[in-house]
Length: 244
Length: 306
Image 1 (spheres, one colour):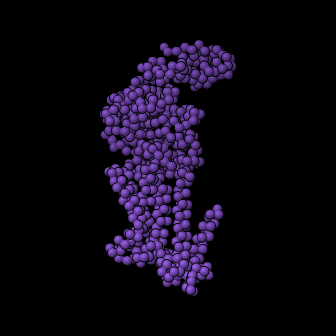
Image 2 (cartoon, chains in turn yellow, blue):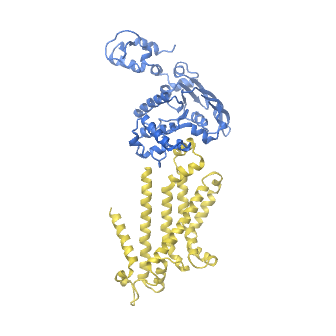
Image 3 (cartoon, helix red, strand yellow):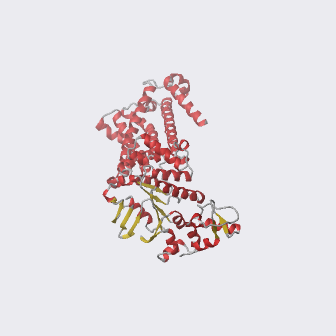
């Protein structure tokens, strides 16, 4: 219960800060030096936040779609042979530093949102893929046997049994991907993507800790809220299935 | 009528089911019994082609099942397994409706069928329709599993250790209910178990399997009095076979005219129950409800092979 109150409070503070950042200037003033501005005003924090969220949402959606389709393909029929390959590819996507992806993507795609989306997409593929894989293959033997014995075709088993039952794990994968992407997206501002990284980088360049702090805090609170949102959804679905 | 003809299944050249032939008449309850690894489950799963036979045929009412697409064949055959295998993300009603939905029944007919089956299995439709599987007790889930298998009114029902996960008290009740419902619906039923007592209690015919071979296929009384091989005799156990034999006949069948003292016994009770009552109350004869008596001598005569 206290957790929920704190969460609501954090959300309210975040909303208030984004609506009227200047009202919070006294709070950030102690972190500035030489009378530097306490609040980042070059671009509206609200629009940066929305843009940041949009980039993360698109990247997570793409990772989820590709990760899930990949997991479905490598768990049935002829696709099974490609399971080790798919695992390697997604693992490489996770280990390859996003900064390096940006550096490689900029010459091809130019500055802007594109390279950031690619970096986030690759970085977020592994959690969704692995979780979808676990979900699709984790059905009890009885459920699979009953579904086959009742005359469901392989396609019907996928849509009616395997996918719905893997939903909680898939959501957990999306949650990890979303939280990772939310933080990682900040580096997109080094190649001119409109993210909250802009505030942090401005702070670093002008040695203004207040900027770094407010950029970081907004991202942090967003991450906690999104994490909790996904968890609540997972709990509901798991509860319905009696998985507790 | 189910005819199994020279059915075999090989795994890596090893026969798990070896040239088995048997016929189950329409409306009969046949029990496949054997130790684990005897091939009984594989034999059952070849009937709905969850396992593809290596050779041989299965004929349902004269039609070779190999001529039908497997998933269409399975929708015509009810299938219930140990631990019920209910779909955890679907309500009781949705679980029961699985096959009718696959067959494209109209919605109203499905709803009516679900309620009918819930009532048949003594589950209040209003209370149970919307429940999720995890909200059911073991016995309730087992009944829903069987209801689901019967939903599309199959002529044939296959059951793989359907009572295996139930505790003994619920188990006896579930067996009674199944027998009653099977008689009432006239469904042909093939059931797999490793429990000889269950086989004797339920089966019209018992098929004893060992090492993939069918050792004996006979009425329970014949299996008890005339085991075909030493293995069959060991499986049924010789210690209490007299009592098992008594459990097969009903008091009403041997009631003779006469008078006896004490409380009466129901004509539907087994001879085993009657013997127990004689011994417990120290009587030589019991009155039967609705007239007649059953004597200790008559029971004694029934407990011996003829």
